[in-house]
Length: 113
Image 1: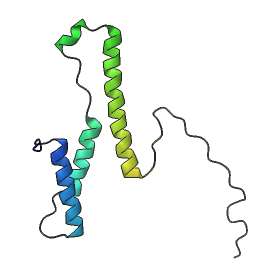
Image 2 (image 1 turned 135 degrees about the vertical axis):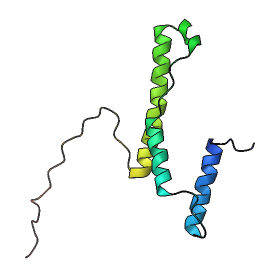
Image 3 (image 1 turned 60 degrees about the vertical axis):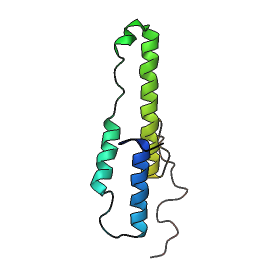
Image 4 (image 1 turned 180 degrees about the horizontal axis):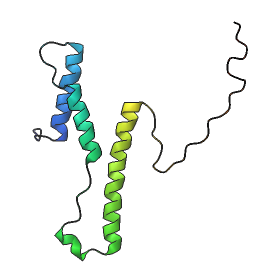
């Protein structure tokens, strides 16, 4: 199946060309850092569309489920981006950070001046 303009296949192909450019940098790079940043910001701004006119027949529970599902999908995408960029597992939304463990010994202990 041919790549859809602006679709996942087209984006994957562009990223593949950009990786190939890293290995053999000749000519202009397929992607600039500014484009990567713009793409990430656009993905972070993306929101699920409101239910359409057919949704008028939905119950409140169905509407809530639709919105919750969309938000869960968006959060999964944001978490995947955070993991890739930060190299760590992001904290779940609303998670409180635990206080850091105190060191076993005072900082600098055992060092000779």
